[in-house]
Image (cartoon, rainbow, N blue to C red; front, side):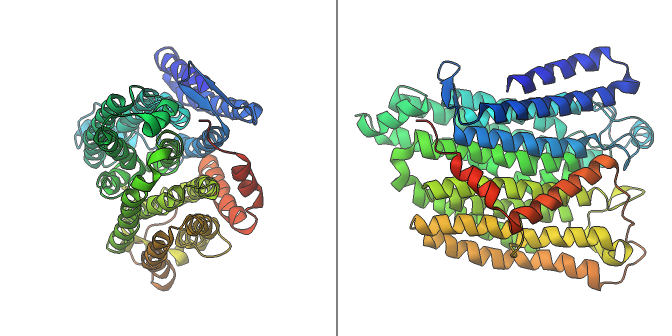
Length: 494
């Protein structure tokens, strides 16, 4: 965490003192080296478990695993963010203050180098996600929530093209995120009123022994859940997701879909398994209802989408429901299968958005589904890759999606949550339709005049695609190594 925060601060200084012509190279190199160094430190920590920073941070097995997952997925995301060969100057606007749809805006879209502030902002976001996964009290968790949310609000507004759509997405994300943060903070106040403390161990003890009225506890817990479920994109707190995924620069959408989901569920797992373990009989039916709604609503609305980024957004919502199934198993298998799911989904969704960045014309990315018709004949290699990714999302065998879904569903059955598994299977069947529709459109339709060519990826985008595709295949064919790591991650420190 300290390495990433330090790199982010150095990145701010680079913006002020390094010449613009070399700034992109310096920032990208600095960010990648910082992430690699942070990953080395996580690995060196090994199985050592300790509560540090005056009980504010818990370094335990799940916390280390999720931190490592965020760092690895962050490295792949950074490859997409740093790519500049697909778009002159990169995917980001040169000056965020340029008024959209003006001559100056059109000029910067064609020639100017993109803003390099995205690198320190990304590092601040990733560092906040690490803190969020390892926070041992509610105040630290709230600070971490703001640390990784505020940079994302800014990053969503920095698209080089479609500036108004990007700014609208950032405004929606900021306003709704602010409401969610307010609910989370109000929940902290109510839980403090009940327990007299904000650290998770004291809350767990107070649930069993406090004579105070339980209404404070349950209303506070509900408000905390609103803040976390908003970040996880669970129904009914999902309304920001399609607009933000569509309007944000695609590399930032990939970062949010992979890393933010790991952070959100890392915080939710710690809340459910540590701080509020004594309320499991109360939260299971409530969060179970949210999980069912998330799976069904995400799947049904995905069927109606005509934009590939919005389709992947509703797919992300449905996958949040599947993850909730694992969380609500409330057993060790549920914990390990949820962590496996987060990693497997992260690699797959990064590869998916990597392909989206390649399908473009002179006006930028072609995200309308009608533009993908006949893509298999124009570019069979990348159409095959995207088909494989969609089949993984659908949960077909020999892909990471199948292994991940099987794990969370098996854990839910062991935890006597069969009703969630039934809803999950129904949702998966519905969600298969939009995936297969895209596959049929790419391979069985004739390419038309509107069908764009697929750009040749740069080295970094190619690396991200290879990493995502190989991980999706390996975690489906031979998932044993990662499953063993998740099982050996142990349990949360209490």
